[in-house]
Image 1 (tube, helix red, strand yellow):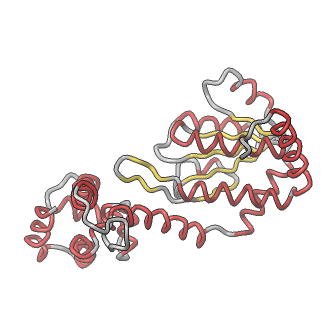
Image 2 (spheres, rainbow, N blue to C red; image 1 turned 180 degrees about the vertical axis):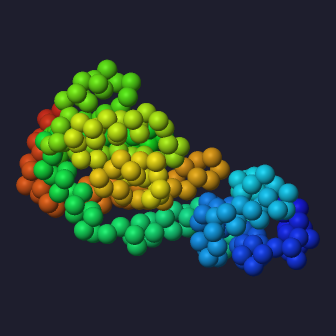
Image 3 (cartoon, rainbow, N blue to C red; image 1 turned 180 degrees about the horizontal axis):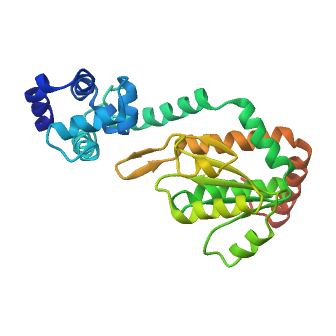
Length: 281
């Protein structure tokens, strides 16, 4: 970390105006560099992603990712491996605080960018669908499975659509223009989920995609695109905003199809009680 700061000081007179804005973040708010993508860092100081990347290369590094990992390790050493008294309180540079703040920021972006009329349009498509299919890549399988399970429990017409499943091609062959495919296409993008979306659209299905950015490779193959920012720090993706988006969709469906949802929930609840599924104190 100190080496990075020294290189920035030595090269400061050679930097462009935009690069100087980015350089200031290294000294004043290194946590922004550590926990934001190059694009997000650039937005913070109103410069382009390429300006951020060129700065890191100008001071002798391969790129933004290399610099980011150095800062992450330094913060981890300072705030995690050698915690000070009061860690977890309101310290401005707390490692935990910054991780949670990044998730809060992602939800705030979702709040600002998601239009209610778009969400209502999504819910309308789901509500009137003959069949709903949910697909994703391996990294977001847990989220897609949770979402598909809930949809099927309350609407009784939802299936997971995953390449490699024995039913995969049979499901695709039965798909038509009365059906909806909900795809979670998140980094790292995989070819199989993109191919699933292309085939589903060719079969006539309405494609609703949840992804992390407008220029995602799935954008051109989707009828409706919903964006939720993903944090990828310390090699661990944070899907907090995606889960918030899925929860919002579920709650809107609960309101729109109130009677059907509650009838199905009461039915499954009776089975839970009959089989003694849940512990009673």
